[in-house]
Structures are given as C-alpha cells and as structure tokens.
Length: 75
Image 1 (cartoon, rainbow, N blue to C red):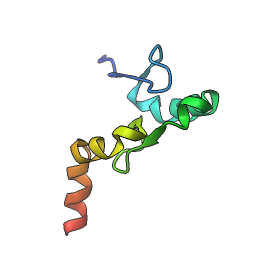
Image 2: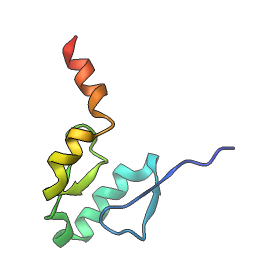
Image 3: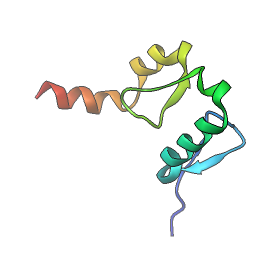
Image 4: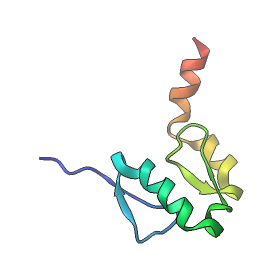
C-alpha cells in the first residue's frame, strides 16, 4: 500500500500531517496558537495553503491551484 504524502503544519513545524487530514489539523492548531494565527492567512485558491500575511499575494500569484480555478471561471 502506498503511503500518503506528509505536509508540514504552518502553525507548528514539528507537526507532519497526511494531506487528507491537514484541513482538520489546521483548524485545531489555529485555535491552539492564536498569536501565530493572527499573522497567517489562507490562500483563496486552496484553504490548506496557510502562509504569512506578508507573503499571501506572492503565494497566490504562484499558487499551483490557481490555474485550476482560473480555468473554471473562463468557461
């Protein structure tokens, strides 16, 4: 059986989560780390992409999920 890729939690780098559980984990970590959460923002193309507010625009310009959303709006 193939193992699922692990993602690093943006709120606590020592946390590594399977992609399938990341969304639930992020909600929990956000509540446990309110000081860090105030400095972070979610990407509008993928809610599992949590980046520092200062880097949000740069991330969204280069987001791998952007093309899928943009292509869907053009039709």
